[in-house]
Image (cartoon, rainbow over all chains, first blue to last red; front, side, top):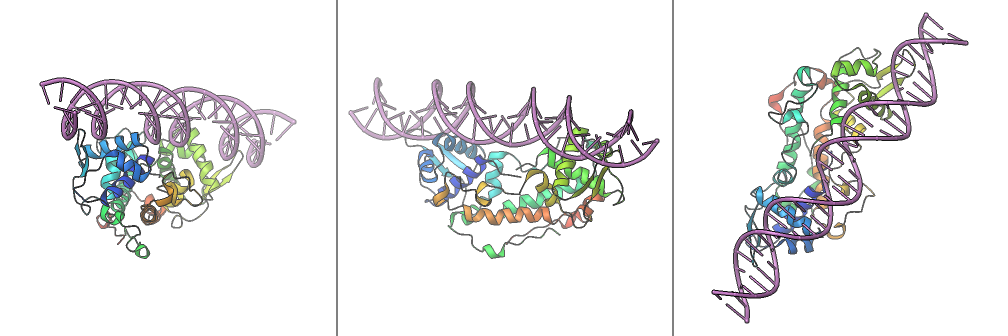
Length: 147
Length: 147
DNA sequence: GCAATTCGGATCGAATCAGTCTGAATTGAG
DNA sequence: CTCAATTCAGACTGATTCGATCCGAATTGC
């Protein structure tokens, strides 16, 4: 139940990018220097984020990355899924993946979909814009209900 | 963002145990046969669940496991934390773990606590009793809000 | 007292993850 | 037009963690 380090780094990098002018040129070198992420890792992550459609890439001497969408449109779920793949707690929530050994009479499987959507919702409700500000907008109101 | 197979197996085993009479003797062999989990793995998991206080263990020829608490008291969060350790999305949400390389001026860290609590809440809101029934009680009402 | 059945810890192999390195592409200056 | 500098993109290596299996210790029933 832990996020990979890569995903963590990606979130930090995207938050740093969001604090810049949306149209500014952001090379992986700059982002690495600002966040402390190792440069090669930052390059790798930027490539993945670009492949997912979150960043626009521009090659060449004056190249770099630019946010493909507005800060409000991008959510934590988008960033995490770009790096780690689809948010799926178990194998059975992923479609066309029925290699679960229990499979046949698993009476728990129907429940996983509900929990999985709840977790995904927790990530989808956090926009990149809210991550760019230094402190949470309203940490005291962090409540949740799935019932 | 995926649950480990061990945690998944533990949930299936606990759900199977919950369907029995609460005071019935439940050997790892029986649970393994009912769920399809490999026997050695089931033993290892039962040991971890017992160490966490979710199961009462009884050694010997007539030994086995019994639920230590009622089905309504045990939640998904308890089971997952028993197997995988504390639910902590990133290293910085765990106390006394400040080995994050970014550390000093990480402007994203305050937000992780909010997200982490939301995810943990999604797990804590599912009781073992609701997992024992074949289908979700109300799948259509699976809504969530952290705002 | 003996044997059968069960938990508990330790060991081994595999998969994934994190990080680093080298190559291809493009732009800007000379 | 040529060259060089800067950048992204893919492939490789080492390490950590995960998952499964095996063997030993303990306890009860006969």
